[in-house]
Image (cartoon, rainbow, N blue to C red; front, side, top):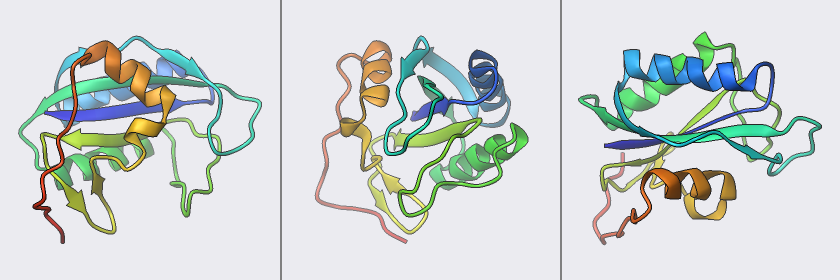
Amino acid sequence: MVLLALGTNLGNKEQNLNNAINLIIKRIGKINKKSSFHKSAPDGFASDNDFLNSVVVVKTKLSVYQVFKQTRKIEKILGRNKKSKNEIYSDRIIDIDILAYNKLIINTKKITLPHPKLYFRKFVTEPLAEVLPNWQIVLKPQSKTK
């Protein structure tokens, strides 16, 4: 099971999320649960454009690294050409973050799981609670790094 957070604040936001969801189904796996779309203000930067966010629960046969690669491809297909770096954020047509992959703990240059800001972002916690109200990750001492 992989949990993905989706966000958009440019263009037709509902269509952007639906397009991302359709590509996730085609490229990553079956969506078992999908939250409703939640409106939120930009977090970490100033913009006149509010976000629309969702969380999806996906059943996949792909490895976490394959899922990561596919989320980046989906973002590019939908028109996102650059990712935020050094916590400098900007408007975006689509953003797909891996929140968790099973109960895997990873801390690499490319991927940190569970997502380090998972519990601090209302635009993630609200839709996540909608699809998995009792979900919690228990961090175990062993970690997988690369």
